[in-house]
Structures are given as structure tokens and as C-alpha cells.
Image 1 (cartoon, rainbow, N blue to C red):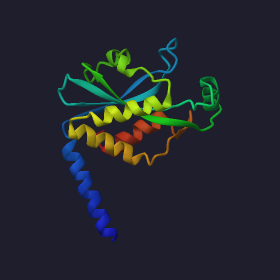
Image 2: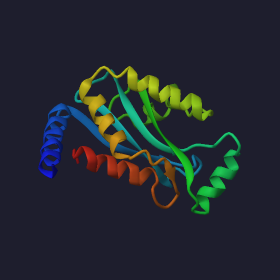
Image 3: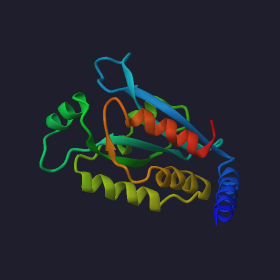
Length: 173
């Protein structure tokens, strides 16, 4: 039984390696507080096809504000080190290239959706519209390895941990 699981896992990694061989993935960093641009703390994953100018996919792990809380209360809980609900967002940025951070950050598609339900619906829509099987498999692998643990803290289990774990998971870097 254990051997069968080992073989399936090995075959999955070989398949994922084959499917993602023409995929670029990297961490994009940006300041949490725009007035302090040198304080770069929030991390995103940028995923694209090699030599593609059609656009990039951005995968983000961010806190969400439950309907019965205010944004301020969520941020205070984060600063105190308390766990807050989080979500994995997937966005497609049209006409952006892999290394165009400013173009990605300024895109209307990148903007936060204030309602968690609408944000989840947008993520699901973007995921369904992914045509490239390699990119879809890469994102699927990242989502699968997160174990549906959508609680984050400021100092641990945050966007930086998520991005590092995601890169380790797809074994591209």
C-alpha cells in the first residue's frame, strides 16, 4: 500500500515537472504601506508561460475581513499576532509581462475586491478560465498543498510563508 502511494506521488511530480517546464514563477514583493515603499513585506506569486506577453497570473494569500468585523479590527488582530481568516486569490493581469511589477500592481484586475464572497467568486472565475494546462496544474498543485488552512498571522503562516511553500511545492526554484 505504501509503495503504491510512493509510486503515484513520484509519477505526479514527474508529470508536474513536465507540465511546468515552460512556466515561469517568482515572488513579487511590494510595500504593505504605500507611504513607506522601502518597507517591502507583502509577497505575491507571479506565474506565466515562458516568453509570453499575453498576461500573467498572480496568486496571493491575504487576510479577509469577515462580514461581522471591520478592517481595522482585522488589522489589529494581525498586529497582535492573532489568527485571522485568509484567502488565496488568483488574478489574471492582461498584457503584463513576467517582470513588469509596476504594471501588475497598477492593473485594475489586481485591485482588491472588498467583499470576501465576491473575491472568492472572482478567484473561481479566473481559475476556470485558465486555458494553459501547465499553469492550471501549477496553481492546482499550490492550492492542493495548502491543505485548506486559510488562517494567517502577521508573523507566521503569512504571505511570505505561503509563497516560499508554494515555490518549494512546485520545485521550480
